[in-house]
Amino acid sequence: MAPKYVVTGGAGFIGSTIVRALLREGASRVTVIDNFSTGSEENLTQVRAGIELHRIDIRETKEVEAIPRGAKAVFHQAAIPSVPRSVSEPELCHGSNIDGTFSVFTAAQRAGVGRVVYAASSAAYGNNPELPKRETMLPEPMSPYAVQKLVGEYYASAFAACYGLETVCIRYFNVFGPRQDPKSPYSDVLSLFLDAALAGRAPMIFGDGEQSRDFIFVEDVARLNLLAAKAEGVSGRVFNGGTGGRITVNEAWRTIARQLGVHLDPTYAPPRTGDVLHSQADISQTRRALGFEPQYDFADGIAQTIQWIKTYERAAA
Ligand SMILES: NC(=O)c1ccc[n+]([C@@H]2O[C@H](COP(=O)([O-])OP(=O)(O)OC[C@H]3O[C@@H](n4cnc5c(N)ncnc54)[C@H](O)[C@@H]3O)[C@@H](O)[C@H]2O)c1
Image (cartoon, rainbow, N blue to C red; front, side, top):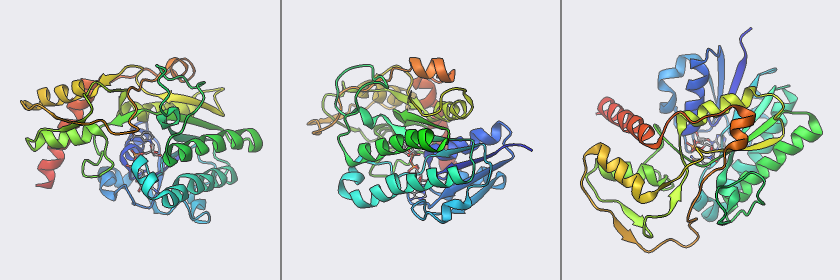
């Protein structure tokens, strides 16, 4: 029988990309668990026939038992993925990001799931200026969100050590690509740039724009998840999910503006307090243990994202 997979947060940006990647790889059954709080059913429209969709809040422990017995892997993506929201609504985010994660691990262990791949975050590294970020660095969480995502990692390793549940954590860096919601106030800088360029507006950049990020295309993140579900001898471990490179915010704007044929200079505002200056993953462990090699460079990923936005907007018009 073909293996069964579960994606929590499967109606979200990254989760829905993992769902597609699983179906492309020939998965016969993909169960999606989502409460549509930040994700949407629209993200799954084209693959609706290939999935089993459960509107479930992962904080409802009982309901998470929708995880099918003997599933090969659970890709746990459900979370409220926002630093500012975790500051303004810490209780709500704690509920989904910590209590919900605990429910998912518990249900996965009871259902005899083969492995849980957990969406962790590079927010764990906080303001430590050392580059590139290595998984062995001491975490320095600076926000409730960073703490919440780290607690998920710690639960992953505890479930692996105490209950024999196989777990792998991937600390995503700055993920971008189709289906990232540019309208969300918590949207990533690239979504905001794309939105501005398409509307013919100059973007606002906080600081001098020379801050840099390890931007990773969402298809690479999905492939990395699939590799993490299969790799041997990696249970209980944490891996960086980045490209190993970094792009400045100014370069990011120039790439987007060039591809859209826009000639606008950004406006600059004072830097935001607490913003990390640079971020870059060391992916040597990810390469070695999971066999991961990014397949998209930044310009490729932006081109695919623009293509998707244009197609989607034409379809929506
Ligand atoms: N986007 C990034 O750059 C990034 C970076 C680091 C980590 N992450 C992590 O990756 C994961 C996916 O993030 P994303 O960018 O796709 O965000 P997203 O908001 O698009 O996806 C999150 C999904 O989880 C669902 N969800 C939230 N709370 C839930 C609950 N209580 N019960 C059931 N479903 C719930 C939402 O409806 C949504 O579909 C998150 O765990 C996030 O913390 C993302």
